[in-house]
Image (cartoon, rainbow, N blue to C red):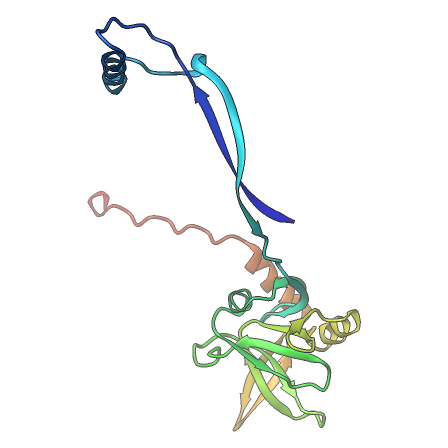
Length: 211
């Protein structure tokens, strides 16, 4: 598929009669009258139209990939997202950081300044021994890996990481350590319903003169 620039030229034509001493004088008189808008051509003077291709462009291919979006206080969602850097930055709300915490051919894309900027804590990452390794803040994506780029998750990967990150977590400090606690389903439902509702407009402050 290509993009073409097509030029449309419409021709308007009208014959007028003037008395003059010569052809040059006649054309000068008509030119002056046209400049003064004494002659204004309209659709009744239409005589033809011409179409001409003046440009040809290759369309840039828009690539998307099927990935898993994991947000705080919400269940993971399968989404389609563009592969450009700007697309990924928009999904995590800033410059991206990429981590590879699993042996699977997947990557985690998150906001590199999520913790510094105070984004809500999202999910904990654990070692194979079950020890907490890190806590991601803000929205993050689980994406597949190709030979040289990010790509779609396979159906097996999508299912595996949806199950792994299915339950939202809340975090409680216990002495020097932090404990991740699963958020109950009823609380998750209430938070999702609250997030889906439009914000109510605040009532205007009363007029001081009316008090």
